[in-house]
Image (cartoon, rainbow, N blue to C red; front, side, top):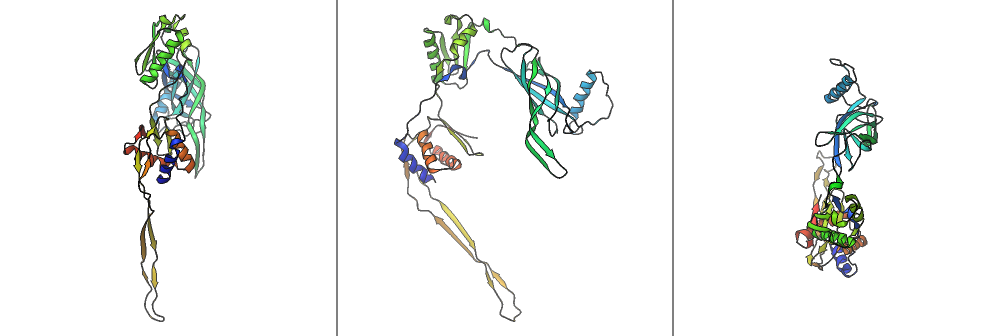
Length: 368
């Protein structure tokens, strides 16, 4: 397999060129300073389940929160023995979008934390959602839409998807706004999602060309600052509106990512393979058992004896010596060779790993 791949790389060396990167909007390359969401979390209770809730003995925290909720509603259950099977303790998570105002609604995710087998048909009881500062920013409640199904009988059980987690669309209402005034900013920082000096310099150049003057400056590989006053925009929001759709061609670091479990390979277009010689020889071990049975003479009192007989051999395919991969081989050539020869992704992982160990693969090699 490796010999065929090497031959394909040599043949395809002069056939493929390097594709140019696609221009991307600045809004898809950076995060604007202050324009970010906030994570929320809460601990609540899902009720109305059809016997698929938590076992109180295995999840005592479910009984505790249920007792607290009932007592807040004026029902005293202290000292009572009850074992409902239609409730489940859950974690509720959400992301508060930037500039969310009081009264707006956001989606939430509900995940069981006990031994509940399904949240299908359940209803989330009013649950406060807090941020990292401990303040309540939203309150969640609603019918849970689970992402799977579970069927159980006396002797078998079938589970499809994940019925212990679900979502509630628009299930939380914002009660508190994040204190941030964008209008007071004189300078706005653009934080690159993937820091790179070349990409940052191109963003700076594109913004300055758009305004026709120096309004942006690269601070480092991950930050470009924008002078709002120099843009002469009506407000910082108007300045961001004018730059977020500017197209920039990002510079991507050469990288090869492989997933050994699924056999997935992802390679960037700037991956290069230097001049390297590769040799391969396939060994085949052959073991054959041919036992020999020896029968006693007729009418004798002897016993049949089985004599073991094993044939062992080692076959080696004739090699072609050292095959040369010329320097400069790029992604297009590798992909074309693999598609033509039908090399499996798992074989390619071993090949790339060997080339990288030899120092001929000029890219960051990540194995997951």
